[in-house]
Structure formats: structure tokens, C-alpha cells
Length: 299
Length: 271
Image (cartoon, rainbow over all chains, first blue to last red):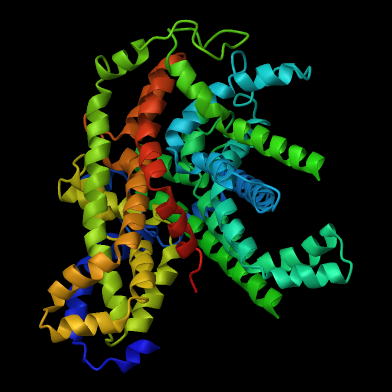
């Protein structure tokens, strides 16, 4: 690295001065709370401890054991997994398709199309969730109106336990695909043109080029995208909060929403902390697995 | 070739319109009279254009107050964190000190900890300081963030050391160097990060929902979510509220979009 050649000797004291504001803030308001939450998850911190912290007692693994017997926790876990494992691949497929289309040499005015696909990403989640809640309205919603042209009977999207989660997934994909599309476009542009030329000379068709060049060359991008998308989706909260309040019949209750309810509505903060750590643990494992996949696909 | 081109264009056009359709409907319904968005079959354009929904938002429901809260908090968090993150990013990029690499890697790996984990203790911490339901409850957790430090570091690393050395020889102090050499040269990444931070803070929901407990302190998303509970049957009013919430971020984004896209690229090439 070039910085080794510096003639001037940098003083570390100046470095620490520059670091200290940001690092103290991150230490005090991020790392300490993480550790505190971990400790809290082994206590029975509840509404009585809120006024006087010494009312909280250590209960060992009780909170984590309680999770196992808590049907609502299993429901929330199942719903969150359903959401993540449906929304992530769909979102990636849509992003990739959009990126491939916009990468086509036949197209001009790419900027306009890219922008319209991207707009949902930057908008306020709460506001668009409200908009979609009305779009999904069983009687007056636009979606049912449009479907009526294909003689599909009105669906109570957010009121039917079987349709509520798919409805939330559709909205999430719409909201998020533009972000990954941008990363995919960059990935596509980084694939050297000569690979395609060589393939064409050897007589490979469009599909073969896609399968043997585009997909493998995009593998690292895809892994990265699936990690960040998955981490984001595991934190599902605002969509069910606004659109269904976790219902109907808890069919859209997510882990974060359950954590919020236990912690900040019923003040069962010890129990809520154990939920937070389960979420962290799941995200951690998910990330590790995808890194492993990346390692093996590199070889 | 021509047919293929026409097909491609029409597909792109139709899907773009579908993607934007919820926004068209949002804007259109926000200019309708009460009940006009609650009819079957739906009407897509107001048959009589009216500002009555916006009027009741700002007069009866005092959304202006929430708008000011959102604006103030987003600007404050953006400016403060930009200052903190840029100093730390500069230090990681250009200084050599003990533990630099391991400290940086440690911070990077901590990025997978979801923010929700910190929220319970953070709430108790701020509560014991009497800061819940104040602006500080939002500003404090936003003082600095790892992603911001990372972004700045990646950029500052590419600033040639010769420029820094020249300023050193001219007798600049460390802080002058940061302010007069590093900051101006990092302007593009500072704009990118400012845009990211502004939009994240403006759009944030869960933490403001927890940390702000009073309607006069609510940010727009929290106020809107609360309004929704009482006005489930007033799509026209709710659409006006959504327009008011989305419009500012939309404008800021459209004005600075190339910086935003650059930021996504830089954020996606870590390691």
C-alpha cells in the first residue's frame, strides 16, 4: 500500500482523537446495549423492574426455555421464515430480470425505466404500507377491481389468513427489488464482453450464455444480495404492523413484532430480550451459511 | 429485431407503470372528497379536485408539527453523524495506529447485529436519563454508525497521501488538515452519506415508535401509523398523509440520485 511510503510520521494520539467521538457513541449506545440485552435475556425483567431495576432477578435459561413452550413464538417464527424464504428468492428473481432487461443493448432511455423501478425503494415504508392497505381493500381496492376483468372473485387479501402473508410478500418485493436491481446491473457490467464473444464464436445460444457465463459470473453478487436481503427481511415489522396488526389469526405476526409487543406493550423485557437474541442468532447462522456457500462456489 | 425492440419497450413501459401505479393512485385519491375513494368501481381521477384532505391534515390534525419534528431530526442526525463518521473514517483510512485493522474488522463484523437487539436496554438507558419522548432519544442512537465510517474510509483511502503531506509541510494542524483538505476532497461521499442518513432517519419507524410517546413529538411515519388506527375508513385523508410523508424524501432523492446510486455500489463492494 502507498501509505507505507509516508515520510511524515503519523501520531497515533491524533488518530485516537479523531476516532473517539464516533467510537464512544457506538460503544455506549450500541455495544453496551447489546451486552445489556444479552444479560437481560437471562432475567425476569418486567413492569415491576421498570421503576426499580433491582426487582429483576436472574432466572437462568428460563426465558429461552419458555420460548419453546410458547405457541405464539412458534407462530411468529414460522411466519417470519415463510416470509423470508418466499420473499427473498422472488425479490432476487425480479431484481435480476429487471437488471437483465435494462442491460439489453436494444434499449435506450434506460435511466427513466431504472428510476421508475427504483422509486419504491426510497419511499417511506409506513406510507406505502398504508397505500397498499387500501389497494388490497376487499370491496373498494384497485387490485380486486383489476382482477375482476379476469373474472376472479374478490379476495379479502389482508383478512384471509391464507392470503395475508402473500399480500405482504408481494408488497415487499415491489418495495425492495429496485435496490438489488441496481447492484445486479453493476455486476452485469463488470462481466468482460470477450467471454460472450468467445461463447458466440463457439456457437453458444443466448440461454447457454446466460447459464454458463452470466450466472456464474454473478454468483458473488448474488450471494451478497441474498445476505443483505435476508437480513433485512428477517426484521419484518412495519408492514404487518400497519396492514394487519399481525392478524388475521396471527398469520402475519413476525418475530420483531412479537418482540415489540412483549417488550414495549406488556413490558416483559427479559422475555423480549430473549426473542431479540433468537432473531440475532438466526440472522447470524443464515449469514454464515451463505458465506460458506460462497466459499465452496469459489473453488 | 424491430418486433423484439417493440416488445421489450412495451414490457418495460407496462411494468414501470405498474410499479408506479400505487403512487399515481395515492396522489389522485389525496385530492378527492371524503368517500370518493371508497366506491365501486373505483375512480382513478378526482371528479372534483379538492385540497380539503390536506387542509384537515394541517389544521385539525396538526401534521405540520410532525413534519417539523421529522425534518429537524433528520437534518440534526445527518449533520452530527456526518461529522463523527467522517472523522473516524479518516482516521481508519490514513492513520497508522495500534489495533487499527482488528478494530476495523471488529466493527465491520458487528454490522450483522440487528438494531432491534439494542432497543430494550437503550430504552431503559434513555428513560433513566429522562430523555424518552425528547429529540435526544432519536439523535443519540444516530450519533455515529459503522456503515457510515466504512463508506467514508473506502473513499478517503483513495485520496493521495501527497496532498496530505503537502498540507503538513505548510504547517497545517491535524484538525485543519481534516477540515481543509480531507473534507473538501471527500465531498461526493459526504453528499452520498448525508443522503443515506437523511432518508433512513426520515423513513425510520420502529425506534421512533418506541422512543416517542406523545403526538406532538411523533415523526411523520409514527403520526401516520397512529392516524391510520382512527381513520381506517378515510383513504382520501390517509393518502394525503402519505403524500406529505413521501414527498420530501422523493424530492431530496430525485435531486441527488446519482450520489445515492454511487453509495449503493460502494456499500456493495465490501471485502
